[in-house]
Image (cartoon, rainbow, N blue to C red):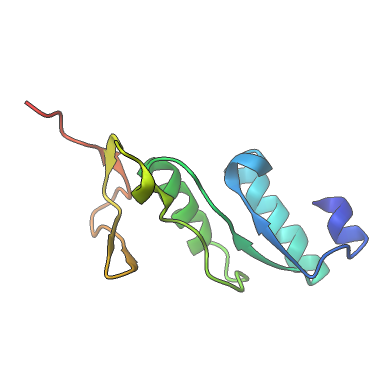
Length: 108
């Protein structure tokens, strides 16, 4: 990301938590983009709601996001052991409690 920003090799980028190496690295990449004047967004986060919860919290900390983020791919999973994030009428609804994702209650 540093090289892309240094060379102004892109007008915009899609940052992905897994490909960037986690939350800290993605935050650092976003800050580099901001300093270089390169637009950014959070891209497809394939995985359970737990991954989406990380991305949602990161998105809340990044005021420079310029385009819609892909944070709801957990809907495509056949089984997701986490709960807390839901999509209602095309809108990601956040929980009102302290956790954005928590383990689902075991089925008895």
